Image 1 (cartoon, rainbow, N blue to C red):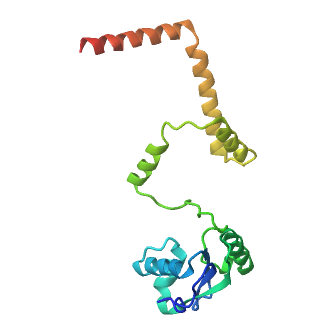
Image 2 (image 1 turned 90 degrees about the vertical axis):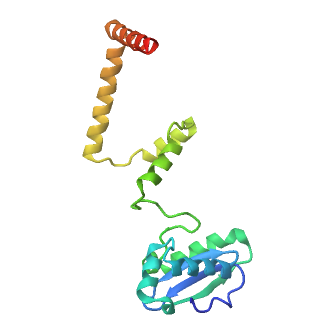
Image 3 (image 1 turned 45 degrees about the horizontal axis):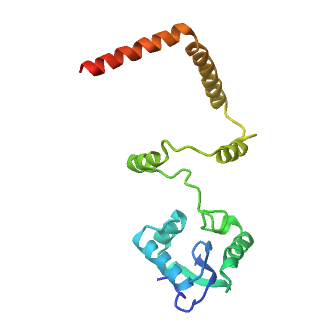
Length: 192
């Protein structure tokens, strides 16, 4: 069990410290004992969302961990800011925390997902249209970002292909072929 949990009533910023490695997990909560109980339950089950903390728990055991309150904060609005300040003071190298900013979820980059989970996410996003404002934000975030040579070649190839296709489909011959093919498909469908 994580030692020292029972005496930590209140809200604020807490730390879970591994005495064997000296690393910290810094978090903030409006109910510190409840949050720590959730951490401990997930760690015991081997299902903690923070893989680094989970690995240390498995390696060193529950006895190597202690928790304490870094700062009590009564105002809910200030907890995230105070947590971030303590993370910065501790330095990212000495932390188990994955997310670099308090209150923001860590990136999912590098996480392996099953094909079913990937397909479920894709089906939610498929057919979705973005507003012009969203598209402008995405465009602005990508502007100036270096692209690999392979990526640039693929972009150039796609643009050239679109140009060729749009020019081709505007010709009367191409439009006549498309019309004939559509009429043939329709006739087969009606006959069946």
